[in-house]
Image 1: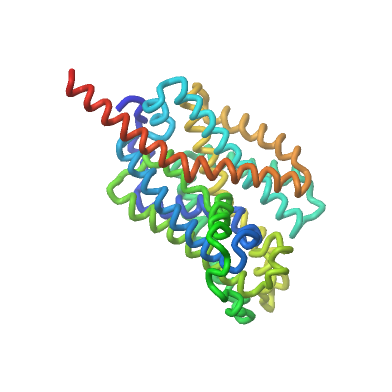
Image 2: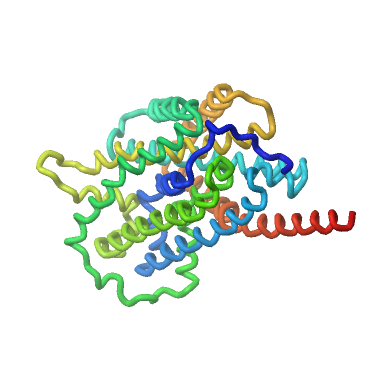
Length: 370
């Protein structure tokens, strides 16, 4: 196949690891405060929006897999070049590289803001940005298998955080969920779209799929990863809706972290401090996977070494991180990125699949004629 990736046996990964890759790519910074945004659109039916958004990820993943199965050992960047030709394909590759870079920056800058707001208000942005980037650089230079290993251990070492949200359940008011479907369908669908910023990340499948060793088992683990993510988001949304009043929720920026503040232990007074600091382990796979995806695309355009790319990329991100200083600026970027991500993640895969199938049929007919 034209533009196929040459992958050595030491670069491949087992299919079961896709569960951890997909799940950790989705669980990042958005989960800390997505409830308020969805509630503004769907009110107490926001949990339905979360459920529908989760269902949408499964549907889009099917289109992604169908497209990738056509090309076998090719990633999104190679598919672009094959379907659209060199020039348009490379233009689309550049757009996708910028998208991955924007996702990386969004996770990094939002986490810095959370740390400054909840734990270290006097800590400079440049120090936090530099510290996080150095950790990412160290992980990234280890290669894909190290990044996948980080995703695995991120899941294993952080999954205990979410059962802690059972503490607020004793204050739940289940009547807050009634009546069901009170919001109109347009509001619920707006809530689904608003989930984009929170639930994206599974599009990393486009880049990592060629590196999977036993591809026939990939589908099961991908959908299990998506299901795990959906169940966590749904559970958190239900706890939030039954704990906060509507007025409280509209004023609570980081509702998940506020729920963690209820957790009390005899030896830990402020559990949310532990959660915020531990969250670095949760966002690390986000950062590494998006960085790796951007690197794979850049390598399609120019010959650049791993070390040179990661240092130049990190320097640019570091400078841009210092430019966004206020909450309104960060919110504006998040809103803009969410709008772009909706079309790239939820609309474009369907279009690409249709074009890929059409291109394959056109080629087969042409070969029959010849």
